[in-house]
Length: 528
Image (tube, rainbow, N blue to C red; front, side, top):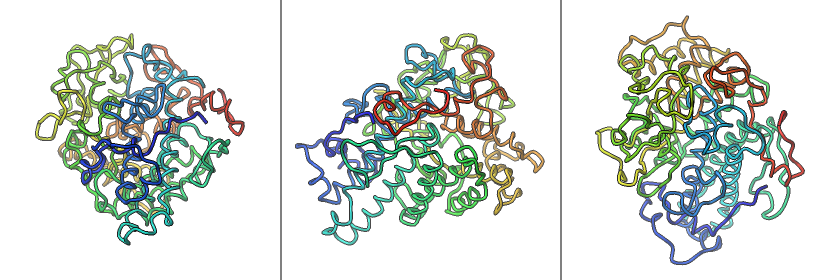
């Protein structure tokens, strides 16, 4: 595997702020460099390393604004920015202005190859997080913590379950993006060796077994501090794994999806009454719906990726950046007309989720490099629910968390699994969940659907309306057989203005050519 730049653990964690109860502690700069022998010698040190595991999905470096980056190349953009680009830009939901300069044209035109910078960057960010989790699990062992108090030992056992969840999450992303990949755990040796290759089916089984094993080790739903995972996060990821099982292993597991979605729904969560509040600078208050967020903080978790990118990127043309809580717009991201067509109107007066910015913008995109072509829609903003700017308006760094897992997605997964023939649920219950989502969107019952309307095509469209720009679209389109091929064409699919059919090989990203050269156990995905 590509060599990862590893620094002393203390230098990686001590300047980060992840959890509300230890922000000040984690914001200190260390006076000396420490080794694992000293960092793991106290409960506080172990907690700080756990913070780094979570932070690896939020920031790309060890200093303010991603400075002193963990990795090189496009990985300095950070996990969430790369993840967004790979999940959204090849689909009908987004198009990028600066595709040439930022090397994103291959991604948004579905023409990448095994040397692509962005598909490689995602791969290396995934394995960086895997490496951090493995190192944590090697060190936070029962023998290492034997001298701690019983209360501290119990807490650290929960930390280990959280680390295993985070590793399962990024391995799930590897499963979804790359299929057959190298595999490493804390049981493997530290140092030079060739990681074995796991097939997609083997990795599916591993993720499933890990999540089932830790579900009772994690805190009950709503019982962990915000930003950390509970067993509801494990249940949600299992539901997502099962919903996509036909793609991953060739076998339907819709009944299992219903089982685990139902566990989440019974966990005490409820829909946030105001949809827009889920994507504002104080969305840390929306614990009723947000099950697991990637945290942001304009003062202490500072990055030009993650939600800073998602707030500033879609501000184009005549849009006023300060209306969205930032100093400037980047003119980067708009949406394609086929996504606009999912909504009955573009004003947001009917369905509040579909409030597009159209002033000075054309619906059609004749030239992707012109930011006034294509409607914009700003989902994430750096304004609070009371209209205040985020904490670091002056520097344009945002406070808005990214909801990696939230209840509405679980409702939609339940409904889809029912329609696909899973047992243990009912179409009547699925309809109720869908209409709860739509009642929030419309503000009344006018958007409610009937049982006859609840079809797979409707669910795919509703997932687009509810979850756009939340990094689900590529996976959803693949599951519905509409990402590659000719069954669904959108503007600039395949790199031509009116779109064209694309090769099915693009349902997977290629393994980086450098890793193939370095590890004889790996085999490139078909077609690359």
